[in-house]
Amino acid sequence: MGSLKRTMQELVPPIVEVVIEIPRGGFVKRGSAGDFDFWSPFPCPFNYGSVPQFLGGEGDYLDAVVLGPRLSPGTVISASAYGSVGLSERFMYDDKLICSNTPISVSDKRNILRFFKLYSFCKGLLNVARGQPGASRCEGWGDASAAIARAKPVRTGEPVPRIGF
Image (cartoon, rainbow, N blue to C red):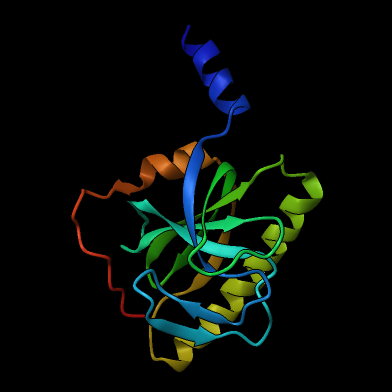
């Protein structure tokens, strides 16, 4: 029965509720509390947000990408988490859930990884400019359920995290 349950989990991706922070095509990166992080030199190729039910590895809400058409900041959407991308930065590991309302193609995965490799390189340069130690790198594609299992559930009434970038 255990292997059948595992097979079903692989076939049916978890559904998460994502709050959009950066719309597809946006340039301004903000944290979950709305604090300015940086101005990107290139537009975000997808909607970027967070899952406020969980804290990710850096102590902020669990990051999530939502593929598809541009969504306004503040939009709350339920979507399937088809995978995750791991990033290491400033001696922390953080997952980014990759969500969509349709299955993700091999080409989508390749483009998402390409983006996060470039993103981690640029974020590493920004960290150097800010005097923050530690390498920044993309760790590759991972399982969404494993990423959610690594996250810490947020308790009701817990304040919005404020992360110093």
